[in-house]
Image 1 (cartoon, rainbow, N blue to C red):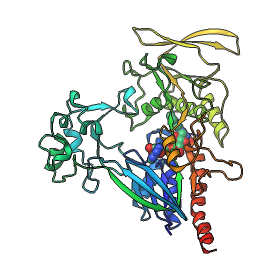
Image 2: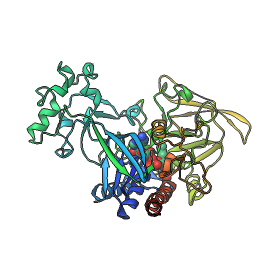
Image 3: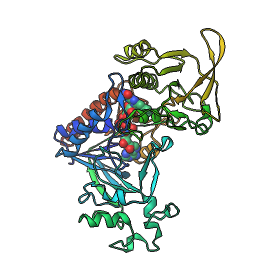
Image 4: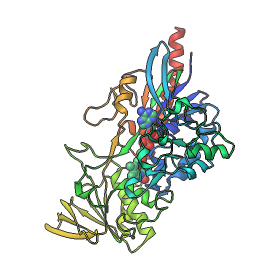
Length: 457
Ligand SMILES: Cc1cc2nc3c(=O)[nH]c(=O)nc-3n(C[C@H](O)[C@H](O)[C@H](O)COP(=O)(O)OP(=O)(O)OC[C@H]3O[C@@H](n4cnc5c(N)ncnc54)[C@H](O)[C@@H]3O)c2cc1C
């Protein structure tokens, strides 16, 4: 009987669950379909309500996972097929090629230097962040290895100047590339790690339990909402988080996209795109994220004028209300009401918000240098496929996984042996994700004992 546990998703929830299960002596497969574990937390600056540095907390855990003898990390990997057995599951994983041999790559960066093409980064692109077609996912990535963008490998970046794209031969036909700058740079170092002919690989595993920790993503507001994607100085709260972050595209310099100047008057609009046409639920974290971002902005520049437009203050967690009070005490202006539109001065790119001041009953127009949209959290877009593969349910309205009996069997799913935690269940903060991950890991470990007893009977 296999006593292994598969964890799908390597964010803070998956990492916490992996360490717990592994410390109980079980073998863990920690699978993430991106090139690195870490999830959203690895991209944050600080974390409410303590404002501790996010990566400083998560990186040691990522390292522990990477060096734990009971944990096998599989990145760029998806679950493809699940067969239920008497005592668990046989699962087919698809490990997609990174076109880099992870055993040989030391992330020396020579291939990155040699790559001629920069593309907008998936998270930071709208605020000027770029990455090379071959790169590490982020500086603290685990595994800390380079990966090659598949668009380069399949030739679709040819018009951008990708050197592989010049070639007329399919990469799978060669064992030594005479064209690609990254291959040549790597070979010059004697590493021979860039392997353009690498293939996707099927891996079959037997596990007793599965923990789904596929997390959340920052919701992308529709184009035009409050001028988003139209005016350069309207950004999301994820973009602002990245601007604050020393590991972000501006190395922590809070500048506005249009002119790279420090914004002085900054507005946060809460509950953006919430409602029937947008997100039909409260994302729970945005009020505290705005408090965090205003506090940190004030730390950067005490004279910055921060204004938060909100409806209800969601400060339900331990220390949350005090955190909001702290922001307020620093002079952050909290205005009840959602602005109804944003217009731009085409010369200065400053933004004018029109809003109703509900307390005073007046319509107000006010100018800001930067507008931050707190656009909420949404479920991962890969959830439906995971649900189908594992025969578990997603809520049609919200897209998060559901528990048939959340009151008495929380974190359990329609398939016995498959458990949930973190952002896979609902919009959630880090501490709640960690609590859930700990509970789910205990359920996964306890299941072995139960199944063994049933088999014995
Ligand atoms: C702008 C912003 C600021 C925030 N600030 C704070 C804060 O200060 N404090 C706080 O407590 N919370 C904060 N949060 C919330 C916090 O990010 C989440 O609580 C936390 O990331 C949830 O962790 P998770 O592991 O469940 O999900 P995630 O961090 O989203 O990780 C999920 C992982 O699963 C992987 N994955 C997804 N689908 C699949 C699949 N099908 N197969 C394999 N892998 C998959 C993803 O690649 C990812 O690595 C913030 C969120 C945002 C957007």
